[in-house]
Amino acid sequence: MQQDQLRSAGKGETLTEPTITLTLQEVSALAAAALLRAGAGEPLARCLARAVTSAEATGKSALGLAHLIDYLDALVRGRIDGHAEPLITSPVPALVRCDCRGGIAQLGFDSAFEELVTKTRTFGLTLYTSKNSFTTGELGWYAARLADAGLVALAATNGPALLAGAGSAKPVYCTNPLAFAAPRADGPPLVIDQASSATAFVKIRQAAERGEPIPEGWALDEAGQPTTDANAALRGALLAFGGERGANIALMVEVLSAGLSGANWSLDAPDFQSGDQSPGAGLFVLAIAPQFLAHDFETRLARQLERLAGEFGVHIPGEARARARWHSGNAGITLPQALFDSISSFRRS
Image 1 (spheres, rainbow, N blue to C red):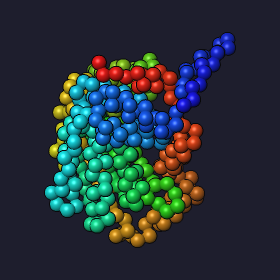
Image 2: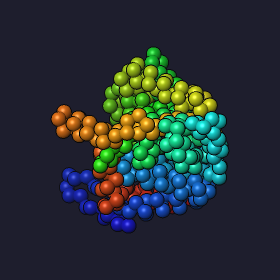
Image 3: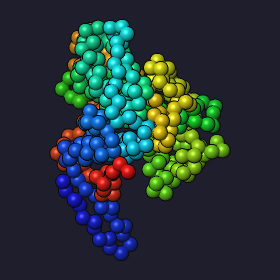
Image 4: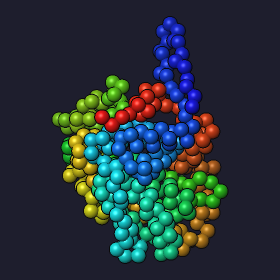
């Protein structure tokens, strides 16, 4: 653990916020200890600590320790059952269904992971759904884990309504992200993880906390008018990327994640930031064993991605994620001292 000193600012300079640098092991231990103090059982604490650490390590800090605060508060307030045991069933061989029972989606997926991989390698593809969970955190974590196991994966999830639909000024969908991952030979997997909204909700919340404006095109205020005021956006609705097309993708995600799983529609999902009810979010994951379709898939994908990047300058999603993970493993994670203090001192009142 390395504590960085607050540097004295010269005339006209801005004071640097104090930070602290932790190894990945220390990040995981910090998260797990806080979760246990908040009332989580050991399985939930261990699983969520790993997922939060992964988000931090891969550069998704908004869904890492900063988002852990939401989980801690939800455990204390009852929005998460810290001792819920996922109920996993398989109605037909190539389907795996999980009821998270008011717990977290990460633990449900973790509990079903080996079965999901085994079934996919046997049948060629497997569909996994979960329901009755808190929000799913970093969606790319689910898809990337399957890619690391040599599978192609598509994931979708929903949550409480935050995003206006096409033609609507009121929130009807969550940010409803999609994630996709595929393994490639001699390199990190291709990982695409993006919301249907123009930006992530947590970015608007962070801007509001800092008193900063947000870019045009991100949100509407309560009256349905475009706004650059982050606080007004929190009372209004997020906008979809690409207008109607993005909103249509949000609807597609809603059907996959909530419709197929039996989870709450976003309109019916309780707030993940207040109250004592679980959002009851849904998760959809399709896993595919590519070797049944193209035995040299990983090599072909590696060559194609190299051609796209080398000859055409295409940005390949997943490479920055891998670089961030490598850097974090060597240099650790630097986070605001205030966030570290908040997590390390968290106590169930």
